Image 1 (cartoon, rainbow, N blue to C red):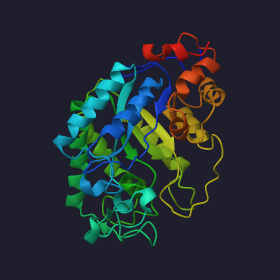
Image 2 (image 1 turned 45 degrees about the horizontal axis):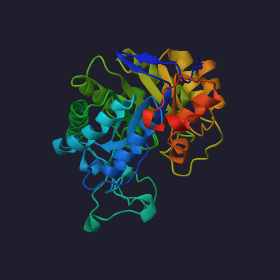
Image 3 (image 1 turned 30 degrees about the vertical axis):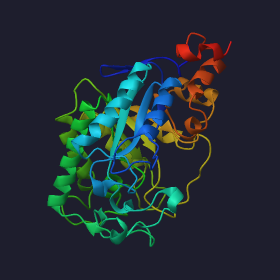
Image 4 (image 1 turned 60 degrees about the vertical axis):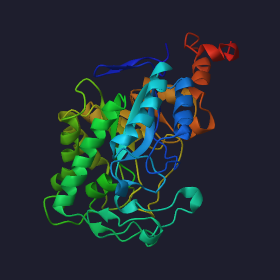
Length: 356
């Protein structure tokens, strides 16, 4: 059996293969609610054979949205629509995950196809927040530095969202601590210039993330996995880097995090990123090798042989796919045929199209 299509057990959850639908913002919600678009988008990837289907970033508060069109899980009313999706995903042989997030200083902008511009409070936007009053760039809003009381409120927002996630039927929760959003903003010395216990030293800058994890674990099932997505480097001098990520991964493993979803960048708008196939995989490999924690590889992974090689050589444990699954929701079924996995089960409704 190929590694890509071998099952993996994380805590008590068994994934049928190593292919994960990476969180991809759809900017298609009203007031945070999942709708038919999300049902079809996520459900079709389960039908297409992925082992784990993770939603786009779900905001833990209205102010935590990137745009007014983001998915949310800040109120109980959001549960029902998500529950419909998780039920369908599981009925089609996959597991359902959700990414919980707060955009911080990168919030209150319009959706990409609406220009990606700052949305003023007069036009339905909101005051953005951050560790320090440092904007992402001159086209984004000037953030308000969070007070310690406000930090505690956001930590509790993550906890409540995780509790709702369990009620909605999700089997995996991922904390979004990457791509320049709020948790990442606290991690980075370039965006966090606080002088209290949440800024300065490495130990202080990771405090916000550790408090979120501590609170999430009080409501999340001990038998189900907890992932954290990080940007392993900011690709910027003086910023968060690989050594920091390895140090953090040691700590996260010790407190019960099961997997590091290893991405890069997103916090420094003019960073020079050497984008190329598999360019982020070495970070997943190094974190896995140095700490022993499970890692997920992501970033310009497009072929079944490329993915198989990453797993066979021990560079990562899961393969997170985004753009390739936008192009082809049924990529896992095609990849199985390419790797000679003839026993991979197809939906009975689609079997007449099966590769022979």
